[in-house]
Length: 124
Image (cartoon, rainbow, N blue to C red):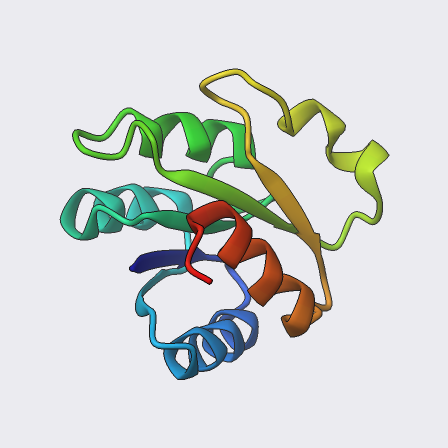
């Protein structure tokens, strides 16, 4: 399974990548939205972990752009956020094509992240 991680915090990206690599996922990384979209076009990820707020776009814009890439319309999206709580990210969640499937608060609880990825990708 392929996972794309997009966050402008280098340490966050590398920490999440190390964790996902250890779980056996094929991981691609990017540090801004534009590069994230290009990476999605190359990697066709099964799941994306996207920072809610990037310098060049927000989570909804990035979700829409990635799902607009050929082969990525059904890509699962999890937002990474330091904003705290569901209320802060509610507008980004839902059933719409631009909506994320779930969110994870920073700092990331890796046990919860693993469980969420397994649920979304049904990889247990």
